[in-house]
Structure formats: C-alpha cells, structure tokens
Amino acid sequence: MSNALSVNLLPAEIILQRQHKSKLILFGRISIVFLILVILTTSVLIAFRVIQAAELSKSNKDLVFAQTKVNSLADKEKQWLIFNKRLSSINNVLGSDMKRKAIFNLVIYLIPETVKISEATLDRSGAMSLSLNSVSLSSVESFFTDLGNKEKNSDMIAKVELSNFSLGKDGIYYFALRIIPKQN
Amino acid sequence: MKDLKEFYQKYKLLIWPGGSVAASTAIAAFVIFPQFLSYLKTTDQIASIQQEIEVLNTKAGELRNIDEQEISRNTRVVLTVLPTDQEVPSAMNTLQDLVNKSGLKLNGTSYSNSSKAPGDTSFLLNISVSGSLSSVREFLINLQDAPRIFQVEAIGARFQPGAAALEVQIPLSVLYEAAPQVTMSLTNPVPRLTDEEQNLFSQLSKFILTEQQTVDTSRSVVPLGKANPFE
Image 1 (cartoon, rainbow over the protein chains, first blue to last red):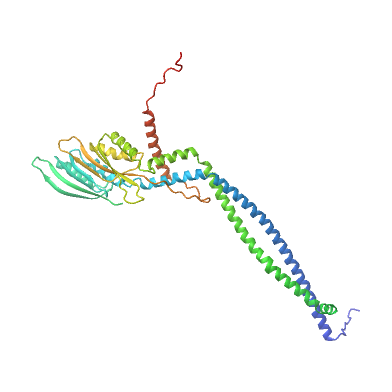
Image 2 (tube, rainbow over the protein chains, first blue to last red):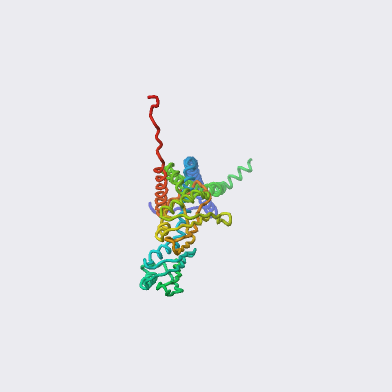
C-alpha cells in the first residue's frame, strides 16, 4: 500500500534538538573542508615562495656577473666619457665668434674694387666701423645698395649708419660707416 | 579527566567548527596574507634585477665594441684642439703657421693672461700682421680649420698712406679647459655622439691628421751609410 502514514511520536523539543544537531554537524564538516583548503593554499604558496627564492638567488648571481663584466671595462668607459665630454665642450665653444668673422668677411666681400678702406674696426658685438674713400660715386652707391640688400648681405645686417660723407678737393669721396649686425 | 570528557561530549559539535574557523583565520592572517605580500614584493624585486642585468649587458656590449686604440687616438685629437693647459708656445706656432699660410706677415705677438677668476679658461694672443684685405679674410677662414680654438675678439685694420699693405691688429682668445671630471656609475648608459658631434669630430681629426702628416713629411731622411762598413 502506497499511502503509508508516518507518525512521529517523539516530543517536539527532541525533534528540534535533533534538527539543531544535524545543522551543527553540517557546519562542522564545512569548516573542516575549509580548513583543509586553507592548508592546501598555504602549501602551494610556500612552494611558490621556495621557487621564487631560488629565482631571486639566480638573478642576484647574474647581476653580480653583469656588474663584474661592466667593471672590467671601466678604463675604456672612462676614456670614452673624457672624449665625449671634451668633444661636447668643443662643440659648445666653437663658433661663438662666428658672427664677428662672418660680418667682417661679408663686408670685405661686398666692398667694390674702387672703394678703398682707410680704417676698419670690428668690436666684440660684431659691429664694424669703416673709414672709406672712393673716386666713383656709383661704386659708393652700389656698395650701400648691397649692404642693404637682404640677399646680398645674407640677412646679417640690421643697420648701416653713414656719417661724414664729403667730397675732397682731390675729387675723392670720403665717408664713414657703422654696420650693426642682427642679433640672432 | 571525567569532567573534561563530559565537557567534550557536550560541546564537541561546537568545538570542531569553532576550532577549524579559528585555525583557518589564523593561517590566513599570519601565513597566507604576509606570504602573498612578500611574493608580490619579491616578484617586483626580481623584475627590477632583470632590468638592471639587461642594462648592464647592453652597456658591456657597447663598451666591448669600442676600439681602445681608436678611442685613445680620438682623445688625443680633442685634447689637442682644447688642451688641459695653456700650451702657449704651441698656440703661437700654430698661429704663425696660419699667418704664413694666409699670405700675411707677422709683425708681432703679445701674450696676456686674460683669466681674471679661477675657472677662466682662455688667454689672449694679440697679433699684429700686415698684408692685403683678402689675406686677412683668408686668415679668418683658416682660423676655423685650425687645430686649436682661436676666437676673434676684435679686428682693427688701418691702411697706412704710402704703405702697400694694411696693418691689422687681431686680439685672439685661445681656449683651454681643465681635464674633465667624469663620474662613473654602473647603470649609466654609454653616451652616444650626436650627428653634429660626429661631423665636428671628423672635421677636427682631418685637421689634426693633416698637421701631423705635414710634420712627418717635413722630416729629413738621414743617410745611414753602408750596410756593412767592413766590406
């Protein structure tokens, strides 16, 4: 017969007690499993740490070896550094007078043959003062034009000041110029 | 003992789970967590060591590629151009050669120690020359190719009436510099030359080499006589 009735004749408090006990047993089993898992995790972690310690030791040995290699080449490195530093210094100081020389060479290059220099001075700033004379006014004009032409003067001249322009009894034009370079 | 057994029997369902949880918590707090942190820290340490090894190996490779004799030669070149001392006689000789090469006549030279403070690194050579304007121009161009650094401070040129040539005064600063202080560190990379510095060095070494060849070819060959004087 399938319709069997089960009747629990135990008192209610005993049933409750048994239910409570079974819950505690389940909780106990779960906590033990958890403890086992924690212990396993700890073992794995310790194994990793041991491997890592070996790796660290090897890396330190390799580092010492690499440092020894570089130290053995210290003399060569020092020579290279001296060479490098010196070349860098030369590069920094070379050409600091380039503007002065360039202005002087430019002006000399632009002076026509018929214009003669009596006196020329170039100062530290690159400014040039000239005392000149010429028999030909057109040469003087051509000289002034070239000094003011950006292409001809390579855009190096900022200002040209003319003073003391005169025609002597000898038919020679005398004049003084001050040429001021551009400050780049 | 009997009390203990009774106590255990009464509370064993609480003791086991409680003990397990306490042990798990203790292991997690005092073993797993600190070890995990140490693991991370050591991983970073190993990575940093590996990086340093790579840098050192690269540096060692670069240094091994540098030819020792070549670097010695190169250092001599740069120390000729910018020496550690004034070397006034050699500067004057060089200047004399440049003046002659440019077609000028050297009328006089005066030396002045322009250094006013420790650390100043130049002295003044004031030269007085005579010649044509084009020769002066050539001299200025030749100064650029000189095996020493001469800086033109000023130029004063005067055409004397009745004289064929210009009288020119040129004060020149001649540079020198104390031996460079180099600080070496294992992990500092080997500095490389920029393209500009490479080109500059090629030019400098050409001038110095040309000078040395000129000195070598100007040496006379002394006859040694018979190979065997007893024949």
